[in-house]
Amino acid sequence: MKTSAAVKFRNGIYGFLCIGVALYALSHLFRDDFYSFKTNGVSDFLIWRIAFHMHFIGGAVALGLGWTQFLKNFRSQHLNLHRRIGYLYVIAIILVSSPAAFYMALYANGGFNNVVGFGMMALCWFTFTLAAFVKVKGKDIEAHERWMIRSFAVTLGAVTLRIFMPLMIIAGVSPSEAYQVIAWFCWVPNLFVAEWIIQRKYLPSAP
Image (tube, rainbow, N blue to C red):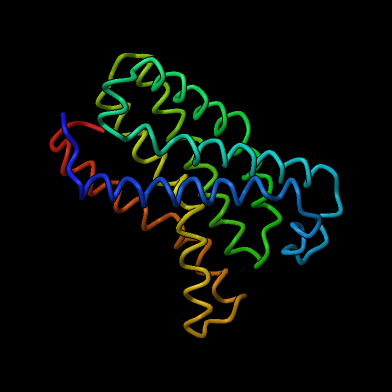
């Protein structure tokens, strides 16, 4: 099946953003100032730093590899590789990044709003990914695809955060106020888009 030039261009931009943010996340391994964004002193604690590294490394793997899972030609031509990448994606989120993200959310800058926002994001990420894994093990491929769309919508929060946070600051919103908004805005709108995609593709299938 041939892929149109427009789809190739869209996939190229999509991959560029995902890989770019994944590499940015991994760059923390080589920077001493990567903890400077924390304002509450929690970055001095070893357990927080371990969680920080787990979250960024696991998230980079999920983002850097996960986007390929939605390329139809890649999936149909390399099904075994698709499955292997899928296992890596699930492991990176369920066992590494989302538990660490939930722990980090408890100490989020910005107080209660951000604790709840980022905490809910971590819980949804874990739950949607686990549901996708359970469904594929049960050979319910359509349900697996739906939950993977939801899971990756949350994964893409890493991209939308880094797009909209600077835009809000450029627009004149203070960094502290922008961070209050981004705790929800980086992932909730993504889920609305995911549900729109699911409804278009699978309506009236069950969840």
